[in-house]
Image (cartoon, rainbow, N blue to C red; front, side, top):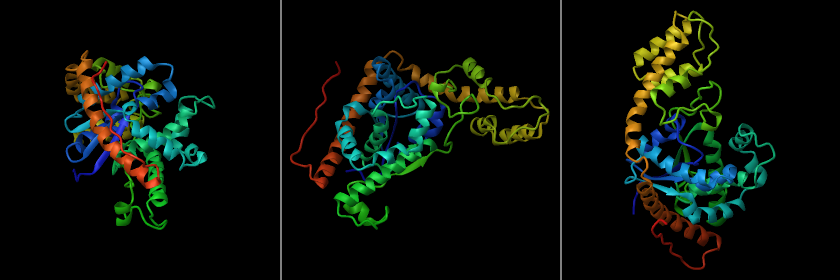
Length: 357
């Protein structure tokens, strides 16, 4: 039995991954897969909250995300890449956890409210849309995860998960209300560890519109598959408000965030920022060009790795199946523990997985 800490995180298949995903979470996952037991979720059921009318798109995007994972450096021999829809313990725990959370508490989740606003859903969202916030707690706790690599916008989901874990442990495991999260009693007697958010160095990458978080749905994302010409064109859309090369620039602008992240030569990055802030005869276009070249250099090896899997769905599905088998071994164990704790445990069960159709 492994003594390493467990990591759980993942992505909803609503399109290809982009640099926001890489710097927000995936880069950290590549590091953690060397030292932790990692499970990376393909949250295809969550995709149905807004894309329920496009099942073929969700299916295709699920495979594309795996290609992006492999391109970015995820190693399926070190981390399990698995399907949410083929991990039934998650759905069962979602239903159970929904009983432990007041509806108003779920709807106060700022990330959920922001998604409703950004996606223009108004009041026209399905019952499953707020339920997916509960489902995210089950995604994490089904693996008894110790940490979740996320962007800063996802931290409220982790806090909701922590609340569920505390409540379950104290309600069903005989743990006193005053016991702290890191108390040995919580760890020894509780079913669930209280997970922590592992926020990447770049908590939120601003998109090429210079305003919103990078998102494919907002048409402000640089995809892993974008060639140098596309990268240059997209960066050209980044608005800073400067009118000339001698205008003093804002050191906190989105363009300067890009300089900090993508110009790997520290001295050169400092020089560009100094000239920009002082308005020392340097235009936005020049800086954007340097940033675009650095981004393309970062993407080149990813694109080379990704090309190895283009058109090869069978290999991708084999990777997913293998990871899903490993994921179910973990989550079925967790589900049995949770059922036993709350009086739902009557007999054991085993799952099996056959070949793909």
